[in-house]
Image 1 (tube, rainbow, N blue to C red):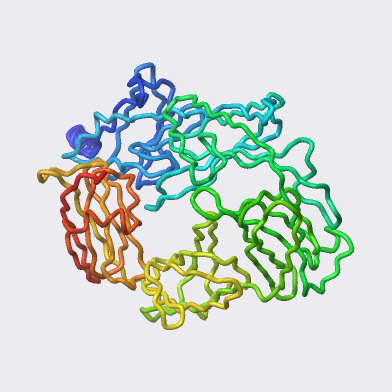
Image 2 (cartoon, rainbow, N blue to C red; image 1 turned 120 degrees about the vertical axis):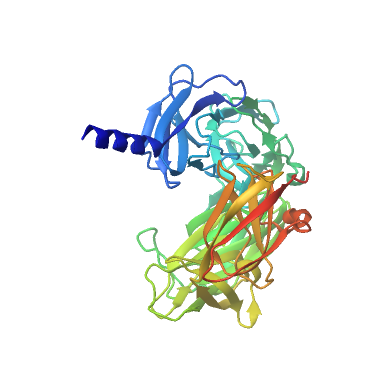
Length: 524
């Protein structure tokens, strides 16, 4: 009995591996005490094992062989081991095994940052209730994006403070209106001659083309002040010349109530500058600054969704704009399964709009159909997900949509034909330099078929230098690795310098493909 117990104990010990290390401040190198550290199996975030670091910042776990997600929480802020950029939630998987050194991990902790400042008017007086908006500038899902993150209002001293933000690069926009000006939007009638503040962009310019990002370092308290100048503006009255809806009161009788969006140039291109819902034509927008704007009207309460839009040039002085409502843009389509069989449960069509990072998913009917009766014009990324399926090809009529990108125009009725497949292959391997596997590298796979609806994919290698796509569509690809996990790998121009040294590979159904790919230096 004792012999059997000793053998069982030895076997058990042989199957357990140490995951240990220290959490340090990324700027000072000092140990981080009282951090809550969790080790979760299979790349999940359940936190099956957890410890609290002591004054030396050290943590330790005993774990079986496998791949684990290591995360930490300090003062309510969570980060993932190996995370290189904020908002990505992507890090390095910790791979345990007999040949892996996971007992000497260094977890670099990036302290949150703060941005503060004051907003003054053209008389040097503080502006109360001004809004300072923060837009993150960085890479997400392989694409360089600019998207809203935080905002704050100024107090009676014109001061604002945006705290506990990840260290990153941000654009800042300050907006407000003079205290003596009338509200931004009013109902029918003749408002007073308006005055408005021009938006001010960091580093203190009213010209959006001269806006620049502010890079905030871990633990830093950055400072950005803004000075408003009041300028003559205009009142823009919108008439709906074919709107037959009659509304006596809102919101008790919402039929015929519409939404008006004012779209103009902003950081990163066009953006919705302001939006007012439940309007009744005619409607006056007060205090519109001189500029070039797209007015977009939508009526989703009507029996059939309607819309209208028009570009207008606004100067100094009131103007009237007439819009004719027409059937709104609509999107529909049918998904056909490449591999015939029972229709899978949980199959979804996804839409992502670049303009404002809007996204939506919708179920696909048992007959393969889907429909969006009212969709805003713009550029969308279309995808299929669920039950292991992906969009192999997407067509609008006879036109193939490379990488699944479609442009929907005002009033268009667009119908898509999507071929979905679940024939995928496991693709794994290692990123190497001098034939030695390297963790925290970026492996990128690029479809060679120009009409493929499948976009570039990236994988941040795990602690043992491995990458593993469990379900990759069959086809021909280019494969490369680079030593910067933060590049915009979905951008064709960004990946172009690496393709000349990329590997040409073919992924065939029914096979597990393994590759070793040399790491290239990032192109600055």
